[in-house]
Length: 512
Image 1 (cartoon, one colour):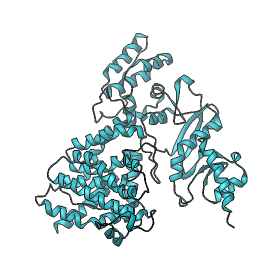
Image 2: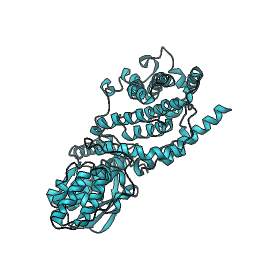
Image 3: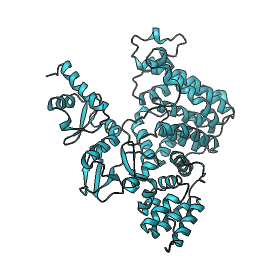
Image 4: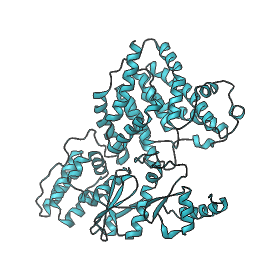
């Protein structure tokens, strides 16, 4: 029996009141049984565990993880505050992940609390919280970021397990590079008498080129009567040189990841054919593949398009005010936007074929591709023109992904660094694979990142003379899984192999 709309509206209004208070983890006793059952039945809340719920979308399919991953950190904050008040903190290792800007959802969140139960609490989608019964640092050693209580950076570095340095070198080096002076580290080392840890941290700082900090740690500890044996906890040298003026963990992680991943790409990607002499023929092939490319790229994003629709919107006389019956017909608007953006991308490809720097071309032109993607929706009044002004100003979450894109403030420093890396990269293969991966990893826009990223792939393909390549809709799951493996586990090999196989197939076709 259907719930009367006015009754459901009352329950939704109550849910909005809760959300307006910034509450993500909804307890059973925070609403009446009637409200809870209505909202649960209609898909507006989802049970995380007995007595705890999160808001959700009714249209989200059963088993989909988007609502959970988007709510994860807010839920953990509310849940832990309810259980332990303010007497809890993340482990040193997970505190360092947060300091480094890595907000990916962990399979298990390790928490310390004097009231911890020393056992895991199962959550949705095979995630859990493990609260360990341990004393926690005083308030002067704690800080709160986005509602999550973590150890301050010096305390986390001192408390970190030795093996974490070599197991997570990118996060550890990014956090070490945030320390510009040895004072805070030394205060804690001396007050705790941590001579062994002092040797390890001195070695770690020397590993990233911060010799002054390393020397100060050793000399100060020795002058205080401690015996210190310096040891490097990393297993290798860093892939980049650290600039003392650049302390952003986001930027340093990007630069380190690029340097590390490019080696994998070069070992597993087909050699570049080189820019063809017959540039007109190459551009004609780009035109010929348009319908196929539009169908698959739009379908990957969930639009319902057909060859006929894609053809119809190509007309010069096409106008959203006259050519669609309903202004909410987003499929037609998306198809027309794709056509307009494709024309702009083709101009960029031609520049690259004429030996302009692919990184510079993409850095200048990608904003135009993005604007063209959504221009028809602006004309139709579906979105505001201000939405095309630039990069996002809000958090964003990727459907079914444990990866949480960098906060919008970080995007402003990441994007220039990204295009600098793209411009300075000599190998087309690396520009292709890492260009797409890091663009969608940063996720600079609220929408359209996937389509823009696939345009970026093909502009970079042109820089090596590879043929335009379509990512098939039928392989969407493999495509997304490969990107997820890179984003969450820093493993670029699956995505490299995925693209390499598609491109090798096209290269064989062209030879025949």
